[in-house]
Structure formats: structure tokens, C-alpha cells
Length: 508
Image 1 (cartoon, rainbow, N blue to C red):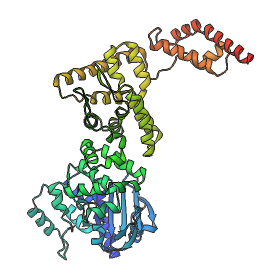
Image 2: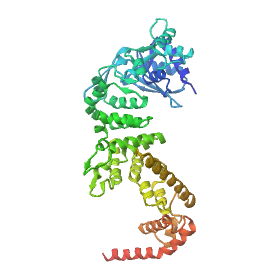
Image 3: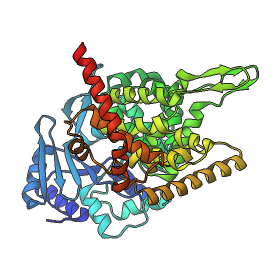
Image 4: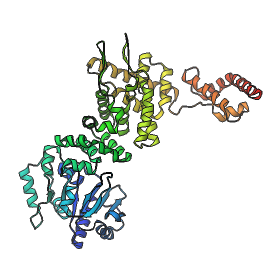
């Protein structure tokens, strides 16, 4: 059964009336509605009563439109629909946190207590479901921060329920903060962040996502409470980091993470990039500033959060490879190799998947390759190796590479960007000519074993690698007949080597 959000709200409103239970839309949905932003597929409701009991009553009316998931211990239930929409009902509650945990002790409370426990004032507003249905049915299209305060008050008055209460329950001036584009906390920020330290990362993510500033005392509280982030699970930290990477300008959030020293605890390998050292008048660039620019450059070219994360990590090997050479200046030789190792360790610490680690580690390892290739000359064999080494990651490597150009010199910028355009053209030429997209020896391992009378083992692998190497070097084409001829040419030598090795083993 397909059902739209407006229809769901109408059913919820009808059930709330039947059950004589006040139900309010809260959180991000209300914020985005007032801002005129695209609505998310997650909607939270506060029930002044039992959230679980209300969800069960609603379930009887939904006619199997979705599936109900119950969390009896928290008086909460979640309704999940086939199209990805999720609505969640929780009883109004107050929370008390233990110093060593993010899991609170929960007590039944009023709507006011429920709203004040929320992270930020812009997320601490509520709209009664019945009022929202009325507003929607009257087509109130001029909503949000573009509507002057006086007019918005009039809108609220026109569509207020009969008891003359405001349509928008806003106890902490959330609407004013939306207008001012600023993040504040309903309670003392030290309490807010100490209770749930993940809110510190959420503040930074929301600032980047909504293009808001953060009230100075909130930033100071993040700095004071930053050590509390250690009690948050690695999985939750990873989740917030990736949400930050998904924003339009993640660099803004990364700067805030660094300024509050939260980055020192979450991503110390990135923080370590900060600073400029000078010897005999020679300076290197601030690699942290450069890194943030790279992330934002990638964000312009790709909406992949994981690729943006690769940009954040691409130079973390520079701290451990920095060296000053007389007559040469500052060097970071091999930083891509050290970076690959550090990335694997860092991402394991943050509980990233094996596939995600493999992806970023490979991009970090090879991010210098296009530059080196252009410096040495773009030969067919060099292009073939790049294509084969990167496989499906090639396009993302090129995006990382061109985004790595952060020079402020417009002439150098244009020249280097044109070099990447030329490289892309050469890659297309070689791909078209050599059919390398799914590269491996056209003369397969089973054929090598059959022709040589061999069993699976190192000799078969060596012969196959030799054929592939010849193709990459341009000695033969990537065609079956040429590969077979080359096999016939080299097989006797490899068979002799295998026989000699067997004799040595038998003597031992």
C-alpha cells in the first residue's frame, strides 16, 4: 500500500483525536519545514502519554502500510514504510545521564521537559499534528525564515487551534535562531554536551549543513567538553563524520572541528598536519589548510562522501615523512605509502567497513601517480599501469588529483588543470585501443596449466604475470592470439626454472 506523508499525518491526527492523546511533530522535520527545506524521510513524534501505546493504536488504522518495530523499554515505536519513510513515536520524557554513558535513565515528563532535553533550539520546536494538518490543508506556502516575524505570528494566529495556543510550540526562541542562522542549546551547553557528547559533532555538522554559525559560548563549551567524546562509540562518531562529509561545504565544519580541538581526539592524524616550519628561509605550505581546500574542491566535483573523506586523508603521511634537504627544500617522499598504512589504522579505529578502507587506502596510495605520470611523460605503458592498478577507482582518483591543485597562482592553476584534461584524453585513447577495463591475461591460467601439464602453483602465476607485463609494456596487444604466441615464446624458460627449483628442493 502506497501512502504519502500528508495522508499519514491525517491518520495520525485522527487517531490522536480518538485516543484523546496530544501528539506533536518535533525535531528536524519542523526545522526544515520552517526553513522551506526538502523534508527528510525520518519524522519524529512526541506523544504526551505512551508512545508505544499510541503507535499500536495507529497500527490498527494503517492497514499494513508499513511494519511496526517496538522498543518497549524506551516507550518508543518506529513505523517503517516500503519507500524508506520512517516515523517514530516516543512518549514525552526527561532524561538523566550517568557520567560514563550516553544511555540515559528515562522518566515520563511534559512536552516542555521533552523539548528542553533536545540538542539545539532550532530542533526543539513542536507542531501539534492536528494543527499541521490544518496548516497544510490551507496551503500555507509562505513559511520559514523568509516570512517576517510579525506576519508569521499572524499566520500562527489564523491557524491556531480553538484554545488559542500557538501552532508552533517554541519555548526557546528556535524561530528567531532560524532567522539569525545561529545554533544555540536549550539548556546550558555544558549540560547539553556533557550529557550527550556526540552533540558536539552534531553542532559542527549542522553548522556546515545549514550554513549556520555557532554561538561563541557554544564553541567554548565544545572545547571544554571535548574529552567527553571518548565515551561515544566509534560507530556513532563515524556516522557523524560521514554526515559532515555529505554537506555542501564540509571544509567549514572541519575548520570548526580543528578550532575547538575536537579533531585532536577524533582525527589526530589530520590535526597533526597543521603548522608551517621554516629552515634557512624555506617554508612548506600548511598541509592542514591545503587539505581542507582539497575536501571542498572535491565537494564541488563529486557528491560522494567517501571520496571527500579520501581528500581529508590523502596527505596524512606527510607529517611522518617531512624532511628538509639542503639545496632542495622540504620533501615528503613516500608520504603516500605511509598514508596508506595510517589510513588503514585510522579507519579500523572508527569501525569503517573493509571495502571502505580498501577504497580510501588505494586512493591515498596512488594519489601522486597522475602527477608523476605527467612529469615523466604520458606514455601508453604508464597509462596502462594506472588503469590496471586503479580499476573501478580510476575516475575518483582523477577527481582527487585535480582537486589536489590548490595553488593561488591562476596561471599555474590553469596549466595543471589542463594537464589533467590531457591525461583524461590519453586514458580514453588507451582504453579504447587496448580494451583494458577488465584487464587480465587473455591467455588464462587453466590454458597455461593444460599446455604445460602443470597443477595450480607459482609457475602458472609467473607465466600469467609475464604475459600481463608484456601487454602493459606494449610489447604485445591485449588480444588472445598475441598472448598465446608470447606464451609459446616464454613457456620453456619458466618450465626450466620450475624444474631447477624442484631439483634444489629435492637435494635439501
